[in-house]
Image (cartoon, rainbow, N blue to C red; front, top):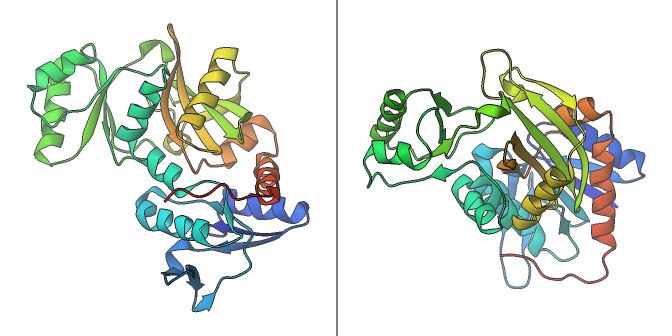
Amino acid sequence: MKIAILSRDTKLYSTRRLVEAAHKRGHEAVVLDHLRCDLVMEQNDPHILYKGERLTDIDVVIPRIGASVTFYGAAVVRQFQMMQNTKSAVSSQAILRSRDKLRSLQILSRAGLGMPKTAFTNYSKQTSELVKEVGGAPLVIKLLEGTQGLGVVLAETKKAAESVIEAFHNLKARIIVQEFIKEAGGADIRAFVVNGEVVGAMKRQGKEGEFRSNLHRGGNATLIKLSRKEKAAALLAAKSLGLAIAGVDMLQSSRGPLILEVNSSPGLEGIEKATQKDIASKIIEYTEALVQQKSNKGVEE
């Protein structure tokens, strides 16, 4: 089997581990920079040119699409899906769904999943009313396009919240306002889902004085055993967004697990080091099953 890993950097931990796991299981693995893929559409022959040469022998792709290139990256994944005999471990539509914070929260809300109360507005309301909608200060303000903890602000007072919201408004930035879950204590849980199974979970704790738990912000990760409710929430969240591979971030609260975000290209370094599990091989095993499926049930356009 020939596996293409769509990644812009061969040296990244996640990319290297996927290549190693593919080789370990006897497969050929190539790393393709999705921004160097040219998409060609013609009658009955959608195809991809990579560095001027046509790609013809890829059995399955594993997308590792960065948030800053979501549009083009998803288009490349979609093109692979349109090509005969090529599968994708994560669909283009699922990637787009998960990257749109507002859309994904709407879907998760409809699915009945717990989440911090969240508000989004076109500033038709007074700022003070928006603060009130999520229970008042302290509260969290997030840029819809933010990643890895960037563009996330904790406003500890009503006055601070109103000032930050108005500042983002003046910058024409799109934001959501979210209830602050004090009892989480600056920690969250990352559950790693592959093909309808939680294959690993870690608890991420923010550094002292930091309410964001992202490892990129200096947090640390430790192994955690999920409760039945936490595991069920992670699986339902991934399923609701159509993600066969997902990193589901949630908070532990007095009212149960609360979903924060679902990541379609979750990193492997933190989860593998915290759990001491070979998560990369779980992903490769899933692609094997995907390729072995006898019939193509169609793709999302």
